[in-house]
Length: 391
Image (cartoon, rainbow, N blue to C red):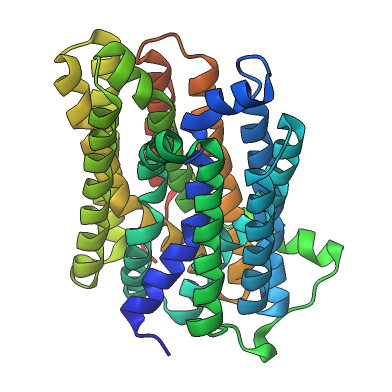
């Protein structure tokens, strides 16, 4: 049996599969379009296909894990992801690539949903927040660093090498499950549900106020992060003339700040409690989001004026991510898989929508990103206002 800390890191590695696969290949879209001889922008169909697969996958994986246990569905999902990603690497048309991306997303969504439910199986309260923080060490930084890593691999291996890397990442994850990960849901706690009962279960989760509030805050965080991912290349490269290497360094700084704060959360949560730390996180996130919007609209401070609040905004998500997950699942111990699936679908879906909109309305300025960050600011404040002030 792995130690508490190593188990959290393993779950974080498995959780990183989805975010990594979402953003890592984005720098290669122009090369993919050129390789298949399609028009500019045609590659966006593969992103839409991936997001559709995530929507289907996340909403089903939690229920499967409540019925069959955690380990089996997680292994099956990783195998499906691995095979489909190999299909992506060897695709010979844009349509084929898009279809393989749908399948890969359905499989990869197991790694996004089930590890979070396993944290709820193992721990509650502050202990769960500490475990979630350690999990975020690996998982949370993936969408921030993935574009930089994808850009590097693109120059070295071409776009197909990006998918071979992702397949290798999935293969390692499968090996780790086989070697080290026990099932956290005992057979006597597994639940068989028909469709009507399943709908009733999801409805009961959705109407629970604590789940609603924590999920809204988590969705706000995801919206801001994906808006940053969609808008940062324009800001750093087109507006302020940074090189790809310098842009990669900016992604690295922001990723490091996220890691630092998530680990700080894990160290101090036993002293201050996840409720208080989440309040602090939302306050910092809202404040820094406001300055991001201000700098984007006015241009005040140039690169430094917008880069610093972006870094601090992303740092604040290090307090939000683990504590919202704990808060959303804490009253659903008997249906943690289903609750985790809903949380992931709503959070990731909103974030992906924000990032996609930034790309679609891009005008060569920071304003599209600022629009989505502003929406995220309002969502976070509303969610915090609705959140029960005691667990």
